[in-house]
Amino acid sequence: SLTDAKEELETTKKRANSNLQSKYINALSAAQKAASVAKNVIITATEIQYKYFTQGGQDGSDIGAAKRDAVRSLLGAKNAGWWREESLSTLTGGAFGEVQKAIETQNQQDIDQALDDLISSLQDVSNMLEKIPIINDFSSQDKSTLANEKNKVKSQIEIILNKKDAISSQKATNKSNIVAAKTKLTQAENKLQSARENLSVLLAGASKEKIEAKEKQISEAEAAIESQRSAIQQASANVNRIRNQIDETIVKSPIDGLVAKIYPEKGETVNPNQNIATIITPTKQVEADVSELDISEIKERDKASITLDAFDNNTTFKAEIVSIDSAETIINNVPTYEVEFQFRKNYEQVKPGMTANINVVTSRATSTLYLPTTAIQGENGNQFVYVLEGKETSQKSVETGLNSTDGKVEITSGLKEGDIVVTGVK
Image (cartoon, rainbow, N blue to C red; front, side, top):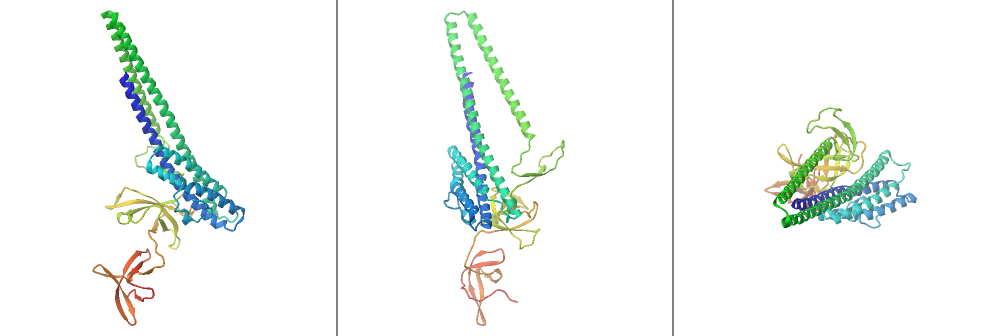
């Protein structure tokens, strides 16, 4: 009927908008990850640049020029071909900034622009990596690192291109579906107009029997149409059911990586929440549960120093926070939050399943006075130390600042350089 055709057109338009927005949101999520990966790749390439190519020469010049283009495109800084890691890590312009803007606005036009800029930037980053020659001085670890970084960038380019294709495909599908719905509406309008004209003719000169016969034909036609509509709906439901069944036969990993082991055998029944495979990612990460007392002290991009029980405490590994779960997990009746740390380099000696001890750098203080925490005394909420003056000791009030993980505390007021402080009594 005409009413059904109108409702179908409106439903088609709403579904088209919803499906397209879903494709855009998926693309934006992938773009955010790709921009972060590309930035880390530039930082890793900079470490190799300063390790092997600071003595001049054509290779160093080519790398610097390619890095300059990559940084300008991805992060928005000019003439940064020889910038160090610390300066690069603070940059948020370029395609990286366009992605952040699109995340804030959720505007489809902004997302399209961010995707176009990001693809161009990823290609510049890829070109930078290709300019780094593998010379004889390269360690085996650096060779592996360079190869991994190239694969990362290539993978991200493919992902973003696929997301753009998905958006274009969805737009084409939406256009086709809306045109089809409009065609049905036009046909329904024409059929209604024809029926009205026929009815007018019948009413003008037809007998009662003919009118009743025509009305019966119209009723039968409407019933046939309704029957066909039900059949179409049933067929569509069957198609969706079969698609869902097919989808359920495919196991998709939430992360990129290498399948190291598959646990079930062919034909074996798999239970809910059962582990079916182990995936090894190119970039190693550490997961830690941080209590609610400490979670407010850290943020994404904070640097961390990690020691592993498998090695001595003098062997440290650099890492940084890449994500903080927004939802709590209750462990032993205590709210905790899952935090992911990503190693700054591809440490080959680090293996999955190792136990890690993590120190996160939340603040820094330089040119400051500090004491062992054992030297600080407290009474009624006041802090003080004992200062040796000649052969006598006196009590001095102090204010403290940062605490370090090795048992030291910053003194912000109350003491001056050269004061002799009693740190303990034998």
